[in-house]
Image 1 (cartoon, rainbow, N blue to C red):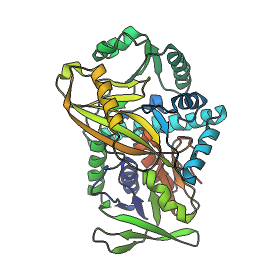
Image 2 (cartoon, one colour; image 1 turned 45 degrees about the vertical axis):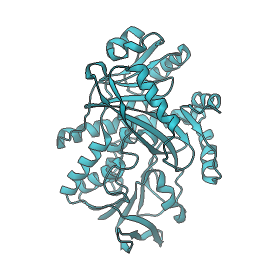
Image 3 (cartoon, rainbow, N blue to C red; image 1 turned 120 degrees about the vertical axis):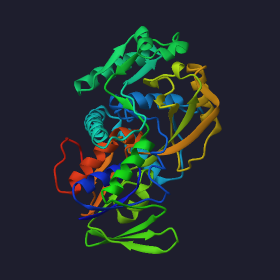
Image 4 (cartoon, helix red, strand yellow; image 1 turned 90 degrees about the horizontal axis):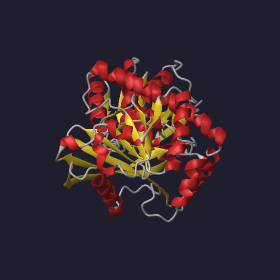
Length: 417
């Protein structure tokens, strides 16, 4: 079959790779000048199966309510005059119920574990270099109540096959000595040795090149204007070429992997896509003293900021703003990341040369991504991965290719259709 994939982030490129491996003729369309230039550009770098947990929970909801009015809140909701946003928020409240949380958690962990294994297989097969480290993920806590909640969460994760264990403050320092400057307020942590970190941008661009060599056609600086339905299918995709001219693209199947922008393409077709952007920030620092910088990927649970060592760089990322589609940098958010870095690693980083970035995480109310066939028989979705696009990307592409090819994927997951 000929398959058109819309979107060249980690989700779209992974889908294209596995579709090509399945023997399909694949064409990838993206409005940017290259692969991985949107949400896959500069995220926190974590392959975090240990935190494949829904934001939609009673515990998180209580914290969001306490954070109302705080400019530096880790998760902030900024209301818009958008029915889609209000509907998303209503569905989020529904998904906070304990029964829904349990079902969503099982689905997310299953996909995250499968994807991590798939990523490792790709790395071994293709020899892709992307500043990856297999040193685990360490979260640390300053609030004893949050540590107790983490203890219960870790036990639940272990039941699902994720070896996330609670550690005391001394072991936090043994795992990552670079945290010595922040030792006093730390009351404990949790550590998952099997998790990883790495640069999603480098990986995605390298995988795109392997896909191109395997016959996948990439059309950049090209926008999909609309999909034209007929007889319960998509009959043609209307594209806008770099020169401004329109072109028709006909395929046997179409895959929407446009992240936060997926609803714009799907809405006119009557295809449900409850995805809303959660804006996040990152700051990337050069290293002044590599020996004083961490090598284990970190999560500061008080402020929800993650840290990953990426070769000769250190990246900090965090915050989530449920607002609009603007990617404009907020100076306060940027300063928050810098000051946090300074408090943890005062001598390790080059604070005079910082690269800031913001991206729109495509988030569903349940945090479970939308993968599978839509109400139109040849239209497939692979979107809504939220903050776990890097964690779930390789596996999501693989199961999407299975579904398009008429095969049953190897994991239990609430696929569409």
